[in-house]
Image 1 (cartoon, helix red, strand yellow):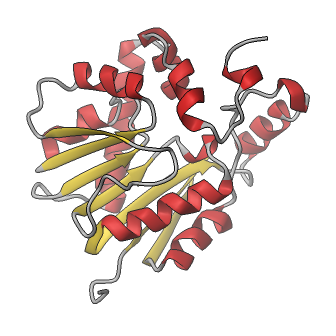
Image 2 (image 1 turned 180 degrees about the vertical axis):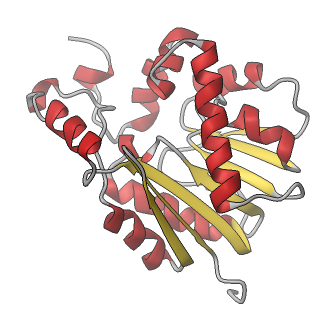
Length: 231
């Protein structure tokens, strides 16, 4: 047996996602479920539209993505902010993102551990978002990133996270489908769902306020703000 599905623990994020991004096709499929460029662009536009319409972002903002992958969303957001920082655990993903985003001078790519945002300075970012990533993380590490987002955000800065919603019909279908894997054959990157209450609790416990939730057909999205009078 070989590959991350058999040898790597789920929490060994760097090894798992380095293996899954061994080439561009594999990276595309594992971050977006498709290698089709038109579909990739469409999903990036859709996520960007939701962020802009619901969470909000200014032209002068510094924006950071946790788990940026190949830059699917960053390609759409980078032209609309002062600086876009893409963080990922996989150097291979970041190399692909660098090629896809090479036309944008305001892009910075940062390799992270898979558990935190240590290379990023305190109170230096206006918006942190993390999309289609929590599904691949252990619960503890989901919360680690929420706490880290609070640290790097300026007062009044915003955090957005999402995951497949266990309470939705589509989310339950995914849960039931993935439940069929025996533990010894379960892929390390397999989707693990969240409930809306779980994500809301992370933001509340970390100190965010004005927490809002949107439950879609498959995803639950939660966002909040670091208090403006926080020190």
